[in-house]
Image (tube, rainbow, N blue to C red; front, side, top):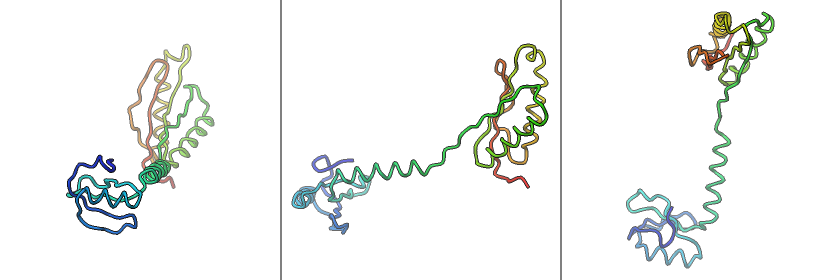
Amino acid sequence: MRINEEIRSPKVRLINQEGKQVGVLSLAEALVLAEEAKLDLVEIVPTATPPVCKIINYGKYRYDQTKREKESKKAQHHNKVKEIKFRPNIDTHDFEVKVRRAQEFLARGHKVKVTCMFRGRELAHTEFGERLVRRFCDSLEDVAMPETEVKRMGRFLHVVLAPTGKKKQ
């Protein structure tokens, strides 16, 4: 953003400190008006022909602008990835509790990463874990869809579920 002498255009469309349009003036005339008001000449819309400039307090303008940017960042919703972990020999009740917890996360709009962990001799029978992860995905198919395929990475099986937006009835 250019201010005062940094503005390169010979003619500018000027807006005064009250917000009223003055018209198209030479840069020198606009700088004189800004100096008389003891304010800065700030190029607001540099892409217009001629560029739009406003007579304002530049420090206050920058402060307001950063404040607006912070507010807009707060308003943005960030999707979080929640993780549900279990082992291949999980009990049916515990499995159902994990499914309900995943449904809550999905209802709030979060993605869910489902992880099945293997220890020791369980690694010899990863098909039990795969069946369990697929059963988990099937039980949530009305509220979520797999974003990735089931992947095995070392001692873990992973799949990420994304909410579909449909509500379970």
